Image (tube, rainbow, N blue to C red):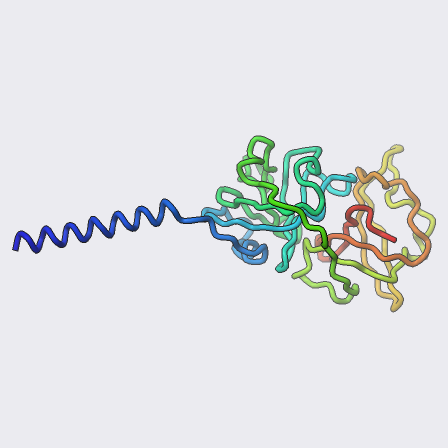
Length: 248
């Protein structure tokens, strides 16, 4: 009987040892951007699992088009994340491939989209990922040489497109705004401004340009253009944020 009990104890010790070894050697799990965002079913979600998302950097503050944030995309969607830096492009060049180690970060609904950032210390839903935290959570792992945005029509845009990159072809600035610059001036300085794109069928789509944008005071094109940008959503409407001055 004693030998039987000792045998059971030995078996349990082996199982415990195997479980500990497996836990110690387990690797972070790579998940899609769509899956990660799906975890945020309410206003916010703190990530406590060892998840990794991998994506291509498609938008930064390179031309002032974004402020303390960047966007990555994979085949499932796009994700905007907040970074406390005024030169994000130095750390995350456009079209570099990056991995984000998500454990310890926070997802939150801001406006009409889900963003990633640090646990808030104030009243805002997210804090920016600080320079000190950057290397802990974000790393460049390669570059993408063949990135191409998906071409869509205004009427195609839906919730799944938020934070993704799209191309609109054969569009122009609406007649009432012809001859204006991308941003209006306030006290002599550019301010964030909405303009209106119109397609050949008469459908319209808003485009928002930050006052910090390097081409904020340039006159908008008067002819038809193809324009590429990030789809955003706020105040019950979709709008475009041009990236990398991509309009021809």
